[in-house]
Picture 1 (tube, rainbow, N blue to C red):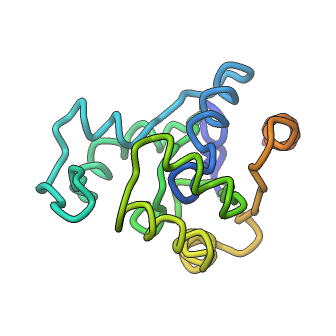
Picture 2: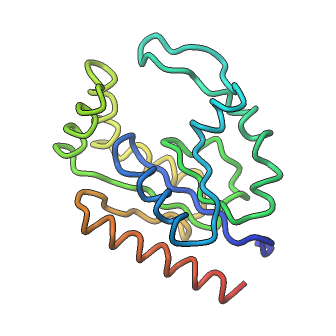
Length: 174
C-alpha cells in the first residue's frame, strides 16, 4: 500500500454501543489524526436516501458518503467511526478495529440511549452473532482486522494504548 501523506487511515467499527465514538474521539485527541464520524458526515452533507421506519433513523446514501470522503481518505490521517464497514473501499484502510462488548453490558448501554423493541433486540443479536466482525473479515484482508474488547474503562485505556502503539509503528515504518 502506498504511503499516505498525512498518516494511516484507521476504521473503528462495531455494533452500536460498543464504544466506537469514545475510542475514536480519544485517539484523535492523543494523536495527529482526524476524526471522521460517518453519521456526522452524512448529517452535514444531507447524504441520506430515506427514513427507516423500523429502526426510526435516517438511512445514509453509501455511494454519496464514499464520493464525499474519497479525496480526504486518499490523503490519509483519518480515524473513521461507523457501525458498518462492508461498503467502504478496501483501499481506504490500513487497519480495522472491531469493538466487541459483552451482551449484558451492551444491552444496558443501548437501553440507556433509548433503544427499545426491535432496534434493541437486533443490535444485541448483531453482537451475539459477531455480525460486524464477520463483515470486517469478509471485507478486508485478514491481517488488518483486529478484534478489541470494550467492556470496561480499563479495556478502553488498553485499546487506546494498543492503537496508539500501532500508529507510532506505522509512522516509523512509512
